[in-house]
Every structure is written in C-alpha cells, then in structure tokens.
Image (cartoon, rainbow, N blue to C red; front, side, top):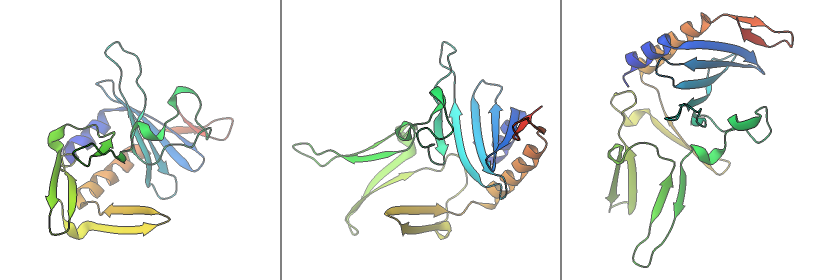
Length: 191
C-alpha cells in the first residue's frame, strides 16, 4: 500500500484511544471490518506495538496478529483471548535436515511466495532470503541499513524514508484529534 493510501485509510477508520501506563493505545475499525490496535510511547510518540484482527467468513473475531513490537508477557495486563502468543506472528527459523538435503524453514510468513526472493551467494557461502518492498512501494537504499548485536540478539534497523516519516507525522496529528477523557481510575478513555 502506498504511503498516501495508508494515511487515507487510517483517516477513514473509526478511532478510539486511551492513555494507560505511559502508553497511548489507539484502536482502529476500518470500513472493511478489519481492526488495528497500536500502542505509542506517550512521551516520544514512538510506535511500540501494532496488531491486526479480521473477522472470519462467519463473522467471528479472529486472533490478533502482531505486526510491530513484542508480544505481551503472559499475565501482563492482557486477559482472555486477546493475549498474544509470540509464535502466532513472529517469524520462527528452524532447520530440518532430510536424507538428501539441508532444509531451513521460516514459519509465520503470511505473504505469498512471490514476495520472497531466495538466492545463493557462492562467494560468501550463504543463502540469502529477501523480501520485495511492497508495503510502502519505495526503493530500498543500503545506506539506510544498520546492524548491531547485543544480548545475544541481532538487531537490524532500516532508516525510514522521508515519505514514511511525513505520513507518520500526519498520523500523529490525526491521533491528537481523537478526544480522550480521564476515567475514575485515572486512565484516559475515549468519549
């Protein structure tokens, strides 16, 4: 989806918001029935969590699918069926050897096969898995890529294109229009 299309889609959605535990939580209901929930850091407006839910063919609510962020730890503020389990959405890498081949599997990749490009780099002696950038339809620039390693975790970052930063800034302006009121428990709730 192009950046402008995304912003228009968000503007058209019915939105509710609340402030809780230093996070601005926003729920979106899109005209097509899809739901999106986001959590932003209240001070920095940094997106911490984004998850999606769609109705089944029979109209039942499906499970939340995590797109951005980490799943909530068990018992941490989420009760009931909306508790997100890590392996529901995050890719899982595993190796499975057969008699005749080495095999690697990456689970929880929801897009069709043509989104992924797999090739061998004989010079580096590695197999490379790439995705085409269909989300924002913007070219990728290797200078925007950085890699770090800390606490046994490989961290890959890609600097957002200016078009995406501008669209997110517009989104924050839209979110400020969503009215909230303080509830009796001190949290803010949508009116």
